[in-house]
Image (cartoon, rainbow, N blue to C red; front, side):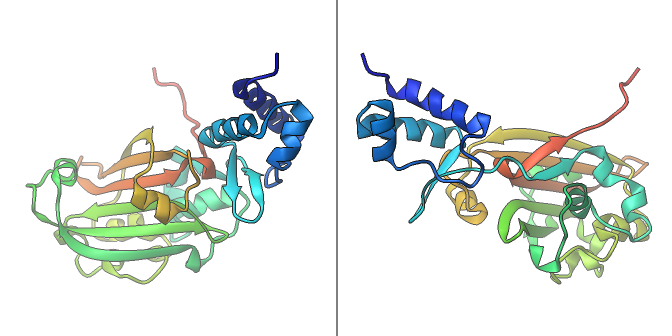
Length: 255
């Protein structure tokens, strides 16, 4: 009895994980795989669909089925927010991620728009304001080597950021120390950060914006930034292409 598509998917999965098919290489043509494994092309097609849904391969026009690279970018945990990186104008969080990943940051890697909008229920709850209150939205699309990695939108009370670099649409961070340094100069120094991370399948807009292949989920980050007195000075929502990052956290075990 011949093997089924699940068995073939398992065999190809093992070959990819062993490195027989390297990242960014192309699997043999479906007709060749069918002949090699003694199955029909329909079985191969179903097996490849399983691997696509798992995010191991993706179809590329005029190339075929390409083995996807594993996460190339480290997304640091608490270390990315270290005051030593931004308080004295050195660098900002996502640039710290680039440095930890051995990659160079360029100003063209971040585009952004700034708009005054009405707070939705989530923003209002985070900032402790009424739904519909005006807030500034600073929305960024970040890329690595031309490929989108994540979308991040930060929300601020107008009285906290009016007239600062945080409402300037110039591409790139809000100065060398980024938004955290801007807030510090406003007398609102970030002291405590709370992050919540979950995964889900992307929306059609996210698929288009992040150029996601079929079957890839996104990692969704929500961040609240507090001053030492407990005032929330930034609420951020980020959507990350799951295959573009590995998430790394190092911390002391609490008592």
